Image (cartoon, rainbow over all chains, first blue to last red; front, side):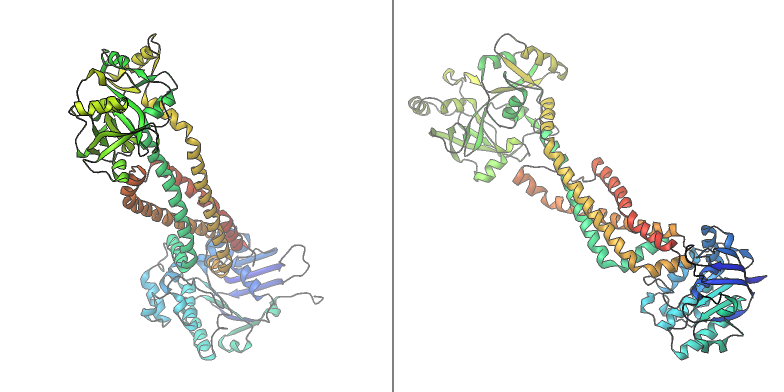
Length: 227
Length: 412
């Protein structure tokens, strides 16, 4: 089973618009793969991720995520599927400012079915410890944490439901060089440990050294040359 | 988790939330106090006389008779004869009959001539009798019993000598300066017109109305016992308060009095007449209600505006919530619940504030305005109003909630 499988996917923001953002005849990502996708700003990276997450319905074509055709689901089904199976890490604003660390992660657990074994406080504590977050910070409002700490809480939030697919959208751009490297290796290690597929998207080519598989978005997104 | 999220979000924006909550509390406080005072005023009004089954006076209008006999307002168009009073008090249905005579005043307060039994039979509120805070009831010709407000405003103590003027109003041309009335009793506050009344004996009132020479002569000749001097038997009185042996016979006796061929008299049932009178003042009542409702509506619009502005600042938060699996409906209800939390806190705050202020102003209101208020502010009417306000809050939160919903369902 592939983690992601796309066939004849086309997407443009409005039906009237002739400007096609994405045109992907075929693309697949194997389960457990850790893949780095790069491309300049405005090349459709975020749009691609929104399609995979089901935040955005496709115009035509099919998208299968972890074997399930997300392009055929209702929006309510997509919301539930996303909560359960996909962990997402943003560039910033990964957390709700007014909640503390623990509550931010519990909020993510809230939207995932409760019978999962991962829904335990113990798992949560282990995860925070692995991410080197001090116990004294667990109950502090997240706006009091440093940028690096916040991004690590962001990882915890994305991983807490043990999703099979992790999507990271420029998650390290707000970090400095040193913390960027440790952030990426931590993320990689945790994904490997969970056997999750990682889709890491960035415009920063220098990051590709951390990943086994590299891909330029233009390799799969075959826009007609007239545009 | 849902409630916690809403609550934490409000705490996070505490500045604008506290101001909005305060505004809502104050407008609810206005509404509750208007409603409470209105209900209490109505109760006070209805309780200005009780235990009196019939009031009989010269034939005029029902409201007129009620106004002058109970509220000391206006004038009797005509008096009734003493003989009619004697006949009435001898009627088989009548348990007691008390004559009252109005028309004089002292320092702007009405003087009520009556008999000693008045203080036994007259009651107000839930059949509460008049209580003396000092002194005793009428005993002799020149005794005076004053209501609590009279005592307080004029600063009269027991033993104070006073003169009664003929007519109504504090300045009168014929002051009966040489009549030696003395205060022998002061009543407790009742929250009824009794507080503003000066009670004297009917005989005392007759003396006031004697010619100057006769009056001097009388005062010289008589020791001031309540004597049954023929000369001092009143020829006429203003009205009679009647208590019946059985209330069932009220209508029967009323009919008999109203249709008698003798002296033209009329009888009213105080309770019925009071509720008729209240209907005429209900326009003011409704105006107050409308104003307080409008205050609430405008404050709720403020709440709506506050939430609407906050949505713009919360775009990232909404996007994040969507990404971790919240549906647009979750976002919609999050905003609604925030509004409901605000109104709940406002309601509790308003009620506490109201109870607090009434507890501390109860004495003041009774003494200054003769308004006796209960402390049970959570009346059925107020509960209904609270329900309605919660409903209105849900409505007021619809625009910001819809905006948040749209933000959540927006194509990226």
